[in-house]
Length: 391
Ligand code: ARG
Image (tube, rainbow, N blue to C red; front, side):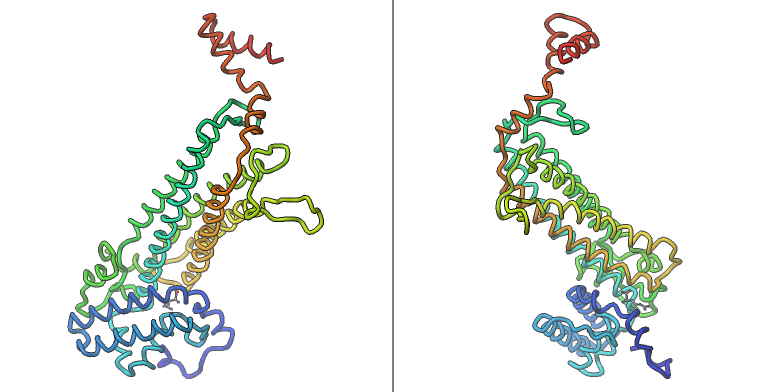
């Protein structure tokens, strides 16, 4: 695709370090959609003959059908999904395929594809978060009057209800949803037309490609559009915060499922056994949700550090933007599904929770409050008197 200036092909290791196809194949749907929008615009604007644009469109549909049927191969010589698709298009329709890349660079192409992918990922996560919230709400409703100890410093503090406790996570997830929604609104601008970095001299119609791909508008600055990845960092930031919330609930399930607590029994479907200790029922899924939060945080840090020192505009370092986003997304989707399943199927133990709430003088604050109300002593004195009674 770029061999005109070269006499020799790349070294094998050069080819290997350069290739992103093994991971960016995940962008194929977005790449086809972006190319079809671009081709239609080129045809409508008269930059490419309308007949040729129609042949390109049909050819891209054919390439997509091939990917759908047989998957996308690891053809390292073709570098990335963009080059593979163009090569397949050439196989399908011949030399007209070479007109598709008019007024476009892989730099605005990949920025567009990746925004589309992250937008789809956010929509998936939003659905999963809503389902998780529904599950929390229904268990909380069921246990609206189930007394349990509330903790501070992991010491019994005051009685609360399990419903109250579970609804704390409902609130966290509501904020996560709003963080993902913010990220989606901010990323929804179309880089196409930025070309390599400087825009293009062809009379393109950026509003048309933006609208065809469901973007709110074209991006304003071409240098920014090809070199910013803060939309991916916004996604990773929201994913990390969400993973930390899941991890805290997972940690509580691990504690609550332990024998000294005994607040919850995880169902067989969400427990694992030990290869040596026949009696064991381990909360592995909860532990892995807790563990995955570490890996998701690592993905955020990886991309932050990748971007940190890059001058404008595109540098190849930015090709490394995709693996951490894909990894974080897969881990988050799995963690959310696992926590949703665990919450739905857990058997809570109201008897154990009530007994724990009765230990540790958890109503001492109420006694102090009672002294203030009934005996009219200052709260400090009521606190002292109650403390003496506890001692
Ligand atoms: N595979 C590349 C990436 O993901 C596409 C952009 C390549 N652009 C370039 N100027 N080499 O970043």
